[in-house]
Image (cartoon, rainbow, N blue to C red; front, side):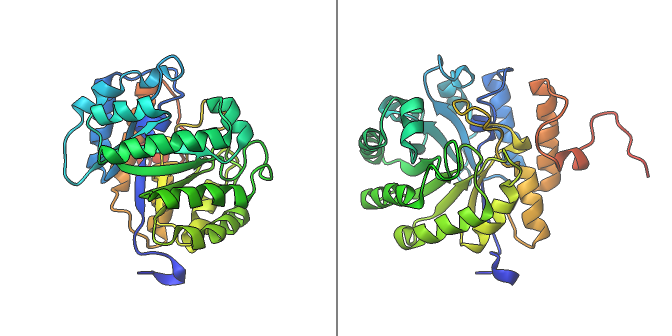
Amino acid sequence: MLAENNLPQTVEIVEVGPRDGLQREEVILSPAEKVALVEDLIAAGIKRIQVTSFVHPRYVPQMADAEEVCARLPRRSDVSYSGLALNLKGVERARDAGLGAVDISVSASDAHSRRNANRSRQEALQEFDEMYHYAREADMHVRGGIQCAFGYQTPDDVVPEQVREIAEHYMELGIDEIALADSSGLANPRQMTTLLRSLSAVTGSVPLILHLHDTRGMGLANVLAALHCGVRIFDTAVGGLGGCPFIEGATGNIATEDTVHMLHEMGVDTGVDLERLAAVARGLEGRLGKDHLPGKLYALLAPPAGRVEEV
């Protein structure tokens, strides 16, 4: 059902801060701190959380504790946890860790795929099939991601046909959801609209998710464009943390609190308590040893401890 101006009444937020948000940080939080972060996010109303990634600790040491984090998570029927896996071993680890959902992906850019995964796009698709079928046999919810859907080094080095080809492949498999990632932060609203319209005939009723980075300051503008194209699920990271560690200059995700604020101001409900979420972002400053996180709104809603606001 739509609100005014072709906007939805509700939007679903997928919080990726515990995974994508922390994977580039020099300060590595303990498993207890990561679980506390998840608990704080749940208390703020977040119902879907990407909690970790199952990758080799040599490449992403921040996620070396994936199994321990999963073992400590609070079990709630109203909250869904997922993990990112880059290969079959990662899917196996996610299953063994007790997760019911796994996020796996392929890059639309052959150059990025070769640099990031040492595989061509076609080779990566073949491996994706193995991961998908294994996850299905384990009765896991599978989200198929398309990395660099809006370009790798420039917006023109990936064309909609490349993205559509991967989406069609996912649909043939029977994927649960498809996530488009602006891995390099190159997307603009016009490009967003063109790609989403191109995919609409392919994906049908399978939900599309957007994973947007705010590298060039167009993250929320892209959210608005996507809303008008029917997208109702967005990945966000508390405080605007994150970014792909394997793409130079790819800075943080769109901030959860900034995204939620914009949606609420437009009359779109997310079920998230904005002030509690802002407090979570403020708390992360101290834990990560930062003076300020990339997000904007939390600084307005949650002043630093000890600061007295003027009346």
